[in-house]
Amino acid sequence: MESSVQAVSDMIGLYALNIAIAIVIFVVGKWLVRKVSDTIEKIMTKSSKVDETLAKFLHDIIYYVLLVIVVLTALKQVGVDTTSFFAILGAAGLAVGLALKDSLGNFASGVMIILLRPFKVGDFINAGGVSGTVEAITIFHTVLKTGDNQKLIVPNGSIINGTITNVNANPERRVDLVVGIGYDDDIRKTKEVLARIIDEEERILKDKEIRIAVSELGDSSVNFVVRAWVNTPDYWNVKFDLTEKIKITFDEEGISIPYPQRDVHIYNS
Image 1 (spheres, rainbow, N blue to C red):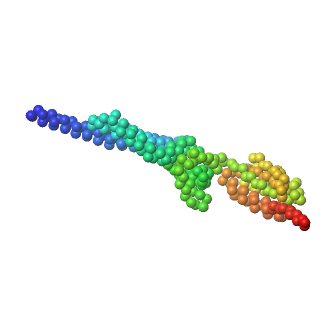
Image 2: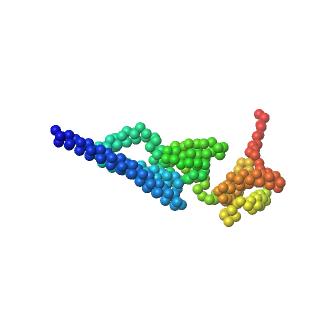
Image 3: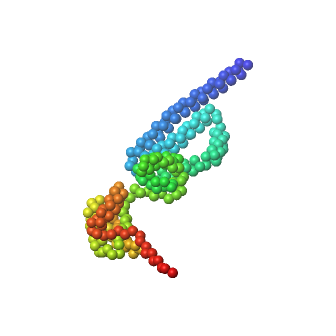
């Protein structure tokens, strides 16, 4: 009888010791996991080649993967069959995956955006049927701010599955203008006036190709194409200012900008 009691007591003591060891493994392991993941994130953040969003994402992945290893180690210490645990975890993951199919799609799209980096915070993009400046890139959605200060939260799936236009991707953009004059106006004079306007605009890059040419003989006008390169941040201001300057200068030079006209012939029967 005493030997049986002693055996039970030893078993309880051993089990309590294993639980204590498992708790220590979990607490110390969690602390080490946090330190390792934070250190890796700091190293990646200090590197100019790693985007901040990517560093944060990798930090979270590393943290949770290592934390799962620590939990499994602690469970194994107390005698839990980790093989059965993996089977249960797999079945649960399948059920959750089916229930959250759309969310997981956005998650996968977020991973692709972060890894491929088609745009970054601060870029102006056209994607997912909307346009705006990128304010944040998360795993499930991207936050945009429109020109009139509206906040758009766009699922990553709709962005990655469509065409993405990154307006700020390149440091320089070409301003394209179409200017029409009347058929009675002097084409040579018009080209000289347009060339002078372009030359007087300091924000236009003079070392890049500037093109002023007749592009079309329209129904009511002779159309010129004006193409000049500017730094990307100057694009809209230059385009607006050139359009205004052309109209004012044409008025001063007596060059007409015709509106559509149609001749109507009336016959009396």
